Image (cartoon, rainbow, N blue to C red):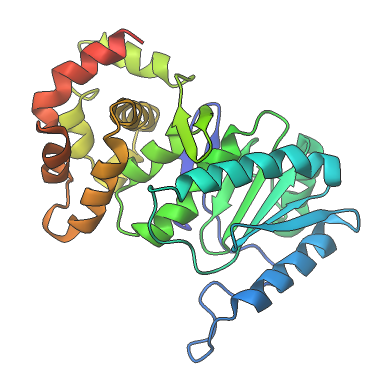
Length: 296
């Protein structure tokens, strides 16, 4: 997510804020003439995590660039670390080619109280979501683990897309991230999404004369970022998620993503990349996708 976005997701809310006050880690882009030092940034962020979250904070580096910190101690960190490791291993297993080259902080609060207290202390305001968010400019994921770990697997996608396909349209970025809000590991190195709370919103639109045209693949591919974040944002998220789930079930999601990424300059909408992978245009595939969706 970009710095200025605020994304309302219903059961989840994600969004961007200005860079948090008082950050001690190396700035996202560094001084114009400075050479970025990953190790120095990792060490600075580890020290910062202990300073901000308390002396009992457990901190570990995962997949070279993710500084995962939990103020609840080793037990609080263990299960979240396991999910983070397995999810990132899957994301880098033939899905994303380019890894983030700069450190990213991941703060995992065990309950709402310390999570809310952190936002109040750091930014003098409430957290923009009761669940979690990713700060693009500060390269920081902050989340309340209490309600579930799906926010983490969602938010981890954003810095990965940022590194691998920075021009990705919002619908694709959020569609893939939302796919892993409700996830399962089918095997080591494999992660998939399952039906979740977004489904009823999409189903309602498909059964509505007023919204049926908006709940279609051609409509999704035509969305600008601004339109995606508009009045029908909840529908657009559901639409993008269930396109990604459909593609994932047929093993077409990552070939489509990668072809779209590699041909973006000449295929801004992704229509041609979709047709090349699926064998049909979004308009031609819409009936098949709709029939699949109604049977879920």
